[in-house]
Image (cartoon, rainbow, N blue to C red; front, side):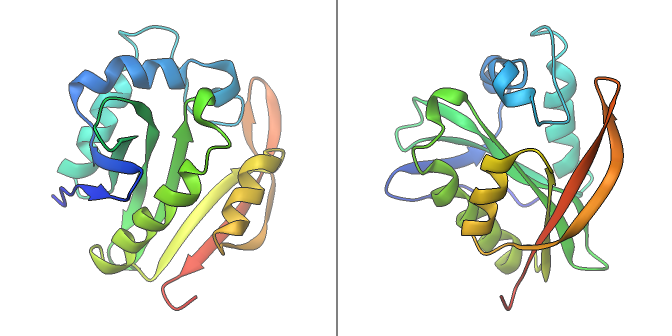
Length: 176
């Protein structure tokens, strides 16, 4: 589909490969990461479901996610990208997660603009949407720093761990 490698002075964003499975499991099984994340896995084998999801996004042209790494590709920081890509309406949902040891180091602030620019320039998007658990104050602050606008809150729209949760809707338009 839209295979691409993107770089900054500090980061390399590359296609997610099968060798990333262990790091993806490490992230998507970590209590601090999955606290506000909609997906989690309890075994390395179960993480294959996520690997299939990443591949199918590209195969079905419904999104693209990247592994976010050090420039020498030796250190895996996390993953980010687009899903729910809607070509007709020129919009997609952005998602992002980092391993906790890399929180607060500016990685999201550096990688997010690369991903957004790819969406606007390469995918031809007009709108990028971000759905954030209303209680995830760190993510909300970070996405607001990146000039995403809060559009509103979907109150008690999802259930996680048997409890209702609310989701804040953010967006960024190409001309923002």
